[in-house]
Length: 379
Image (spheres, rainbow, N blue to C red):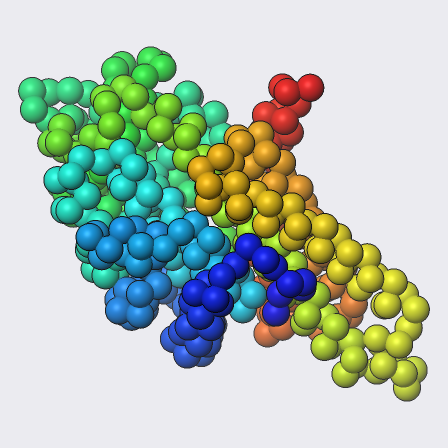
């Protein structure tokens, strides 16, 4: 499926890729349409992924992970994207929530939560966005106020990936009165009294990935659940957002690769005026443009992945990757849908689902307007 030879990956990465592809083809593809209708993937597939060693692959073995690197995490994101699978939200769980606990948690926190996450027994969600605060995290109103040895959590969060099925909620809250700048990151067990899930959102795309609101009403959490220092959460979020944004870019390029492959195959089979659509100059030129842009993006992404793997991914470069690659994906899926003609608008074709799924990538993880602002500040 890859569009060019990629030197950043080792033999072990290639073996993982093959294993992941077989897993997704066997355990996810046959059921994905049903999960789209249900709006959520079942817990059973999480457990199967854990048993197959495909969750939290970058965690050390002592916490149940595979001891792999961030390139391995990218392999899994790519394979899920190549098959057009919007759900389940494995990468949010494995490559966003788990690294926060690994990098900033205490030994007790790591041993309490990470092995269960790697096994698929506990599902994680990151809980940042609020109805009145999206990309601007300093505007959040949810509070976690100290009361003796506990924190009391109050507030509302929205657009939470894995929100319906998550057991562990990594919540960002103000550590003082609303309006203060200090943010605390705290892990909240979803089973705690006062935690309520809203109904699953009916989204334009990514229909197999559960997304909902969460409500916190005087939820008491032990202070031992704080990640890092109380009031020090914004610094931790700033450190991890670059990797999160690169993950979005990785998936965007992989989806673009898949869209090109689907369209190449379709235009070879489909005829217009007795001639395969692929034989028309317009088709060849459009696909040539798409292929060229994807190759350019892939080279940039591989550079970013190498830097991320070596712990030197720059925040601005990650913003560039997220902005450019998600904009590219939007152009690619639009062009490829056009070459499918009327069938491109039918949900049964993967290009239609990719078209719907692609749109949100320019919004979440920090909107592309915010990415431009981050880049623009360096000029």
